[in-house]
Amino acid sequence: MESYYRYSVSAFILLCLCVFTIPVVFLNYDHFNPFMNLSNPTLESPGPKFELQRLIVSTSDQIRAVSTSGSTDDHQHLNRNTTLIRETKKLSKEQVLEQGLASRASIRSAAIARIVRTAFFMNDNDVPVGDVYRNPSTFYQSYVEMERRFKVYVYSEGELPIVHDGPCKNLYTIEGRFIHEMEHGAKRFRTNDPQRAHVYFMPFSVAWMVKYIYTPLSFDITPLKHFVSDYVKVISIKYPFWNRTHGADHFMLACHDWGPHASQGNSLLYNNSIRVLCNANISEGFNPQKDVSPPEISLIGGYLSHKLIHPPPPNTSRPYFAFFAGGLHGPIRPYLLQHWKGRDNDMQVYEYLPKNKDYYSYMLESKFCLCPSGYEVASPRIVEAIYSGCVPVILSDNYVLPFSDVLQWEAFSVQVETTKIPRLKEILSAIPEEKYWKLQEGVIVVRRHFMLNRPPKRFDVFHMILHSIWVRRINARPNSNRS
Image 1 (cartoon, rainbow, N blue to C red):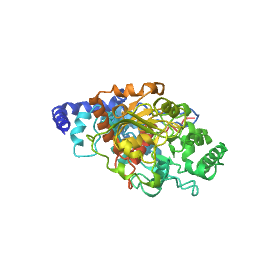
Image 2: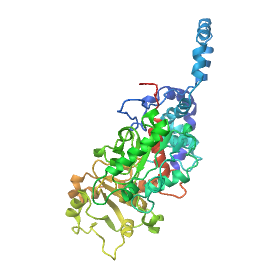
Image 3: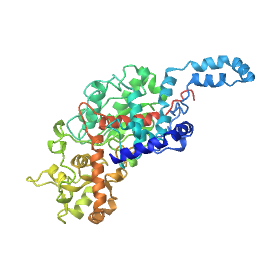
């Protein structure tokens, strides 16, 4: 609360100065880019590409600027070019949409005017504050603009169960819950008019592809690629939107490990489209400039354990120093268990917990929760640790952490190189107590961004995923007239 008052006083003192500063911000926002630096996609395939319209001045403003010059020569020049000016007033629907997305300039300006904005945001209890954010005021402004403008069109093509449905009660819960919310909720963001949409959602489920069309133990994922290829073919023939941008304003979402491989069914989808992938592995083609990394959330039975709904307060004693329990999946976990299983009482590392032990109770009573990757980079333990108020220790290679263009993971987690696993206790023990409490405080702050609510709430995981898509979309502008 003190920081709020401090910022408010500073804001009041600097208000007059900033009145003159803000116009400069709009003219020079490209020099300040703390928020968008991961989000300028370069489309490698030929054809129409996306860029953001940089000018936020409307056509009518341009005309007024010309007509008020006061020069006779300028007036004659205006008459000679009346036809040209009238033509610029006739904007296509796509141009109108892009002018709306030019709010990117105002989002970037928030990085400069953060002190002033704090004074105005005080009436909103949802305002993000703290070191866990790369730039809280920029994030907030971007989020508010998303709520005001963002429209998603959901394709109706495809049949159950593979399309318009997904798992909601297992490791791939995000896949089903997001599809269901876009299909049956999200009234603020969904539009039934594709001409008004900023992005187009292809609501197929890779997890259900694996369940219904994959042959078990065959390790042949060709049927998944064929399904994706056929789906893109259908929408590209029936609608003009895919061909207009080569898929750059389309997105898919998959939490199954094979999501990236399924997206290879169409090269434009793989290279151009926004892929929301839990398996956000750079070594497997994940591109953080255009792709989105959501968290992997496991809800067995479809519900969060009652133990995690209301975790203990931060000052509660945590008798265990570090904890992990899990199967030997992938290359990292065997290495972890080789060095720490049963070797140190401070390091509670198990392959499988004894029957008289409870997994979530261990998390709630541990200072650090070890989160090694399995077969793929993402792990539901990261979110479970956050739910438990336990500081996550990320043990992974090539993983783009969820929402890392907004969240500063160093402020609420510890990331340890997998090669340093033998020194894990030494590394964690070297963290000063004061820093540990700061990390745990950060865990509590970011918890709301990883919560699956029904119905969704502001800044929860559903909205964070949408915001990540929004950010990537506003960093692109259509230039469909180019060959």
